[in-house]
Image 1 (cartoon, each protein chain N blue to C red):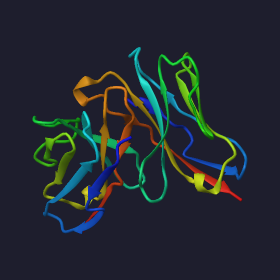
Image 2: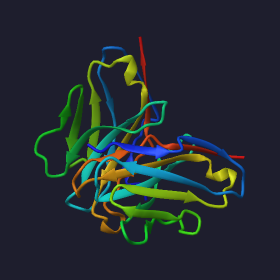
Image 3: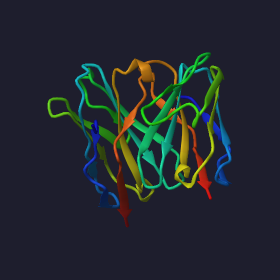
Image 4: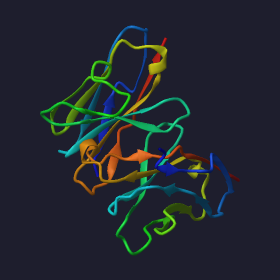
Length: 114
Length: 117
């Protein structure tokens, strides 16, 4: 299994600012993903972070708002840009080794935007 | 369209009893996988159990078992001998053939389980 860490674990930010969330996996993984969980809701996929190329975004999410980097097979960042209170959510990093492997999750980043 | 349906927003069970959490899914892909995760109040997502669409046997992991009925497109989670620590949100998720998204999981809305003494 993969052990995933995220930084920061939580943050309170002012509207209009940006926050970068870091995700580190303890082993090389094929796929990394970023999810959003709004208060009281389920998980929604933001994008798939591809190593060495641009991320693949789901409908409703755009690169200008959620730029993602994945410089290697164990690390990715998600930036939440120009934040508004509607961005207050838990952001979860997830990773999987192979096509049929289990998908594991980091502990999440709790973001509050004032 | 909602691909994973969890119809029970909340469930109660008494300690030491068994409980079944419902999950139905919709896919036309012959190859898919079904997962259950537990999310305690701390927010972490804990993997519980996995069932592949071609698996002949129902998956089991300790006190967790998955009642897989392929024709009915259901994948219910059964927790035997409930413990107070089982109180949490439970999410059903499906992986199907979407290579552009890296075969990422799609989640149901979840069921909140409360285990009472």
